[in-house]
Length: 276
Image (tube, rainbow, N blue to C red; front, top):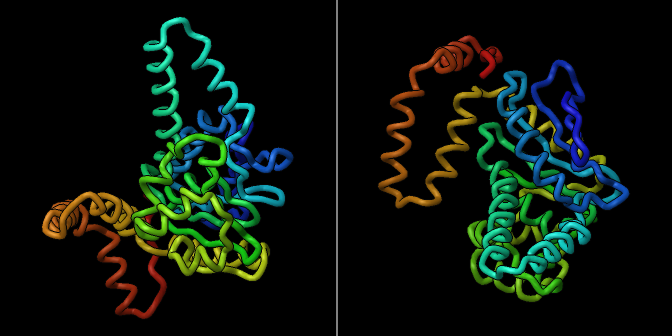
């Protein structure tokens, strides 16, 4: 496995195609440093291109999932933007930095393999940016969330304001973003931000792994295609979305996976799909 400063990739079961991508700065409550924004796209690309990987579980080491952006990194970005003599060039450089950090979070969506967030403890600020880019989200009962940026006198700029309204609705996203209030795992489920709340972290780990294994047992062509079509369809009308999936399936539908799935159904056995 590749070595990273802020992340760890773990394959807990050598017979499994479920891999774990772990935020690994527990002593800093997994705050997102500048190194993280360089490493996350690299780690996701590595997992995406690895044929042994079918599903990725994103979690955090230690007591919390993520405490948000590292304040030292935020101060460094601010100081760098303020140090230049030319306001225009300083602003252009800051914009490039923000766009690069945005791209790091968007890499979660661009990964072909499904990414499942397993949240325990705090999920604050940049942590919310990160989980809203994931394909499915679960949390433990003691998890809590906060869109904290307004309390730092900044506008959330890494994806929460764009993705969260699609998940929970515009009005609720507005209220959460303007107040920066903490909300619980059970409220996150009521909002639709998470699909299920588990009683403890151990139950979360076990339950999410079981869900990931079920997904991993399905056709990788069908799974990656379903993710791609759902993400693209967000930007389309129903008619455009139907046309897009028709085009997608005209290229992908007739596959060995289809024949294997039908054969397994008829023979009442588990299907066996080739790696992607």
